[in-house]
Image (tube, rainbow, N blue to C red; front, side, top):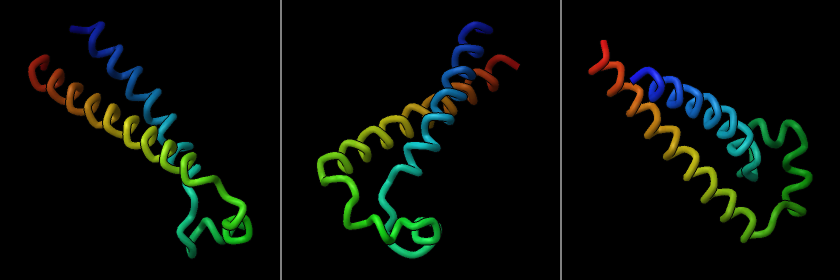
Length: 81
């Protein structure tokens, strides 16, 4: 059970580190921090619709893996301890 726990923890760290830049890559909707750093200026030259859809799919996929890993780690802690 220890090897499974360690591998789940490593996967949690990897997905967490991957999820942060994926969320930050999304195009800003206007207002807030994205405009503060010049996001409003480059909004017309942003990514195409296909790239944005693919980024959405990847982000949702990584978020689902992240959620599943948290649930598995919770179950391991519940039955291990």
